[in-house]
Image 1 (cartoon, rainbow, N blue to C red):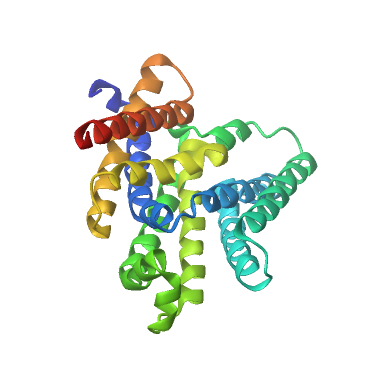
Image 2 (cartoon, rainbow, N blue to C red):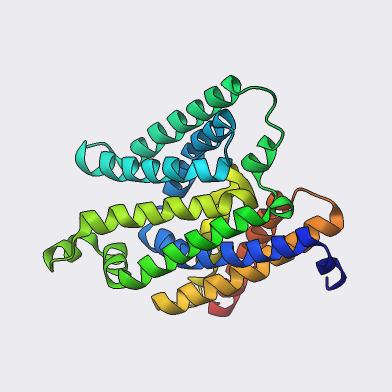
Length: 268
């Protein structure tokens, strides 16, 4: 493993693994606790519209995905709360509209979109330095916002109705949390792609929740597990010459099954 660090793309990949693990640990904890797992999938697929727009306008597709992700997050939150539409229906609407827009934008863009596969299924080995800087900035925004609104996010994650009774601005807090989920999706897109984002955002927290219950400890353990498993998947994909995003997700899935078996064995 040490010798491959001489390559710039591997160093960039490891830095990306650290950045996505932080996001998975922090936001993934709230996603799992509040049971809004499929929202991350809906937002990630809607973000494909931004990727398509990026190709059409000739700008960084990840940068173009940011406003799409935030808009999708706010739309899901607003529609499900104000239009008397169930959350899964809102997710389905935003999911399909975003994907459809992405397809149309790519079709209208001149030439061929050579990196489209990496945005769909991820390619941590091709993350450029410019995307690392963007991911770092988004990580900082997510960390600072979570520190400021930690009590509010924790309150609405466990009991939104009681939080409203005791004076927590639940609607605003919920929309802000959705925005952070949207930003997290953007951070994860280059690593596992819009198709597989849901796995990296939820599996580390799901594994951790089997062993710890305190929110802060859950975040910390999720970050560590996410980093270890992402780097393991990265190394395996390099050695076996396989798609990095798919291998990382398979490592995460296998680890969840193993941890569930161990948890069951201990309890038995």
